Image (cartoon, rainbow, N blue to C red; front, side, top):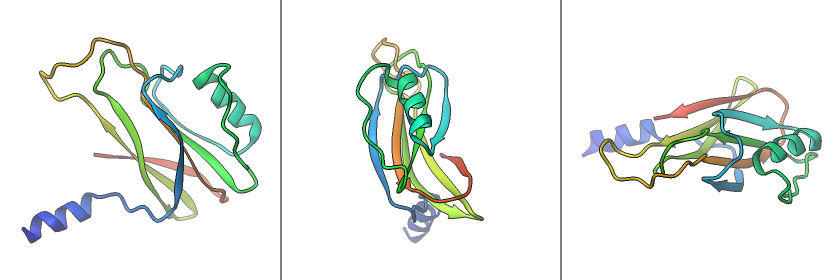
Length: 135
């Protein structure tokens, strides 16, 4: 029992940086898997337009925030998802941790194209943004 608890804690993402979800869903217009950060209104406009076309863009205060998006890309069925689960500061970089979920083998899933995504904000900070996939 203690070993399982320690193993769970060891595998859990260490989120020390607060975040806020802007939008999460299954229908991004970005059909290629990617992880991105936007630090300016121009970058945010470009990212949002690629993701959502002409839909109204949520406001972001770039004096205080940065936007981070994780896009899984086009998938052939339902059952796929992506989630930003946390972040930590490491060596001057913001390390954004995300988890991908896939449908189990031999499961029944809706036969529909999906393009899962999760877009969040973090408090603005200097340095690079790195991404880490959590299994």
